[in-house]
Image 1 (tube, one colour):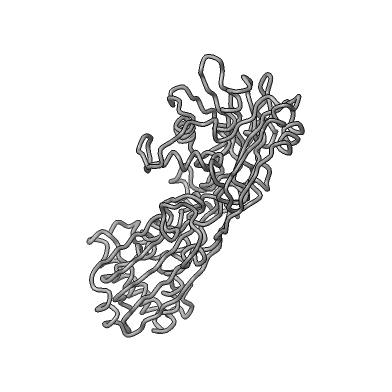
Image 2 (cartoon, helix red, strand yellow; image 1 turned 90 degrees about the horizontal axis):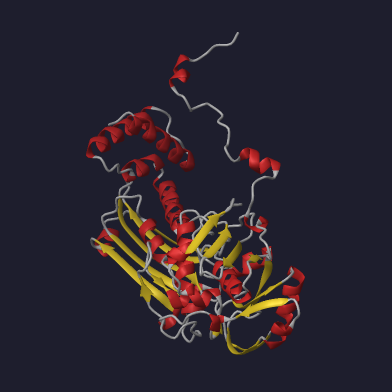
Length: 446
């Protein structure tokens, strides 16, 4: 006999299985992705990339590539407008250094990571474009490279950019209360050092872009991204044209996870199209995606936390060094915001360094910079919880709802629940139960 829960009828969507509006197109092959764009007279573009992690570009000779019968255009950094080396606020979002953005699109005086773009060609076929890359002659002067935080900030390390001492692009510091007094009040102090590696987003669809610069000065870009307006705005700034002259047509996206929020191929395809007077499509190989597009930063993090026997945290200290890749970003600052953000700690000291290394420029990946900082803090808290042998007491003390009407009633409920029932001996289970119960009672509107 089948029974029906009358309460389930109260919801129109919960428990239902709605039809995905894009499902039919995707399972039938009707959906079009960036690599599927076909236009009249379409040319194929390829990028010549550096085989070195760090080197001066002494000379680029493109004459043989231009002489190839199937090649219609060749570009280098010299084809782009010269930009000032300073951050400007010309588009929505954080300030952008146009010289650094342009130099990442096509290397100018130096290559800063293996896979850094040096030149690009457009030809009548993909094979002809690949042949033309072999005809471009580049003379390099190799330089020492740094690939980790430790090697980059070590005494005597070779600088990626002369203006950043010790390869530190940004150095942020935050202090609240009295950190030394906080540790003196603690019954237990645990400190740990952590290292995390560079991790790529690993989206299934490689980067692609098709650009068409028509003779009336109008530009159209087809591609898959997570922010089409910022693709338009950044492309316009790099090319030195009004953003009102560019239209970006969004195609289906085969994954991004934060990694498709900036420009790589778009300005190249457009500039090649301008020189060839035909549309140009460019698609990265999987190898190019890993070598030339932004991963999440590798880190070195040191966390020190002091706590009383009753689970009250008295002090938290953190030193965070985030790899930025070849050009500055704001990844360490984001880690600084996250590392102790979930907890009410009266005495805090945080130091965050943005470190330049010879790797592709970092880009967002699912809560940028937060997982590394949270991993370090939560690991130390787990060890503290085991040490005081009352894990749930620790997390009840840490739990700080923002609403004063919610804080005390919820903490009272949690204490009653956990002290009346069997106390979980597993710290992870204690966390999970606390979160479930907490959300249950927050929904009740305390």
